[in-house]
Structure formats: C-alpha cells, structure tokens
Image (tube, helix red, strand yellow):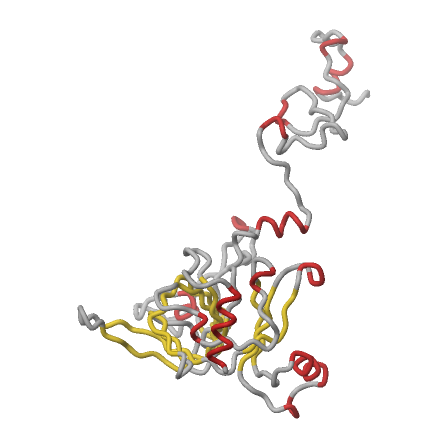
Length: 311
C-alpha cells in the first residue's frame, strides 16, 4: 500500500496556479533588513562609506580618533588644577545681617605642592599631579622616592592627579597651593570616599520596606523576599538585582559646593553644606564644571601671588 501523502506533498505534485513572471520574482540579493521593504539596501563603497551622518544630510561625520575625543572635551575640563584638603569636621556660621544659620564643612590644606605634570605630547593629555601631607622616606618605595626627589619636594602621603584643559593650567613643579587658590563665593566640585558600612541588608542598603511583623511571619521580618520569577522571567536572577551586600566605601562627587570662607593664615577653607567622608579623609577640590569660571587672575598672576604668600 502506497504511503499517504501529506497536504504539502499533494500541493507540490499538483501544478501551481499562481506562478509569476520572471521579472516579478524577488531579486537574488541578500537583504540587510526590513527597513527597505522589498528593495535592496544601497551598496557600500568608498564613495558611500555608510548610511549614517552623511554630509548631504547636514550632520557632521563621526570621528573616533583620540584627537577628536580630546577636542570634544575642551569644554568639559577645568582651566585650572585642583587641590586637596583634609576634612576636619562640620560646624555652622551665622549671617551677620540676617542671622541665618548655615551648616558648613571645614577643610585644612597640609603642604599641598605640585609634584609633576603631564603633557599631551608625552602622555596624551594635560594633567597636574598634586601631593599633600608628609611621609617618612623609610616608608616610601625607591621609585616613588626618586620621583619626589626629581621634583624637589618632600615625600607626600597623598598624591592625586587633576586634568586641565590645556598647557596654561600646568603649574611649575614644587609650587605650593594654598586655600587662597580658591576665592569666596565661587563653586567647586568635591570628590571623596564615603564612609564604609560593611555588609548591610536590603533594608538599609536599598531602602526595602521589609515584610510583615506578625500574622505568621517567622524570622523573615527584614528579608528582601523573592529575588526573581520562575519560568515567566527566565528562572534566573536578573543582572543588577538589588540585594544585600557591601555598602559605602566608594567615591562620591558633590557638585556646585559654594566656598564661604578662605583663611590663608590658618590654611583652612570653609564649604557650604556637607561633604562625603569621615573626619580625616582626603577631599579633592576643583573648579565647578557646571558653573561659570571663577573671577580669578590668570594662571601666571595666581602663581606669583602664591609664591609671595609662601615666601
């Protein structure tokens, strides 16, 4: 007995009644997507390298070169170098006219000096390396000790690098930077490491509300609950799920912090509001990138003024 053919087999044996002409058949060229419908995508060649950012459309051609990347950052880098301060704590000051109380943070400058600087020709970008504090030479490695000796400065406990826009922001090696580098009323961006909390649960780390306090709840009052669904969501824990873990101990940036007071004799600077980190932590200061540049003299005049104060 002959095997029974399926509907598809019967259809293949019977003559087709919907044959099209040769010119109506689809082209034998691979499509690049459904964007162009039944037409083929335009060919790519040296004359037409791509379909995006064409000059005819009035859009600039994208450039991935390092020079283009540096050019795009011309307006996102500060004109001057930054400085470092040691957080001494918080206090409050009162406005003599209105009597308004304002919380503030006190930072102390500890022998902040320029250790070295980097140039675009040698390193690919402009930056100033700044050191603060003091460290005994017996606790410094020989390569780092030679680095400080070449700069003519004492071994520093903290070394930080600040990027600048161009060569006008490079200060001479060994230059002292005091609180007078900043002026009252200007805005700065602060960067420091916040307090480390260690391993914390979901309620403290992410603000979870927790579970019920009664009605059959047993030893699950502060648990986070389910970490994911079953088959409907892949039977897995999705990346980025908020869970208990290490909290704190990361760098936090606080932008647009106002400078209230500058005391060059005592070497302190007073900032409005709070700054992340415990007492004794290192706080990096630099001109606010989202505010107008402070009305300070040019770099050469600032250097001369700092040298006079240091002398």
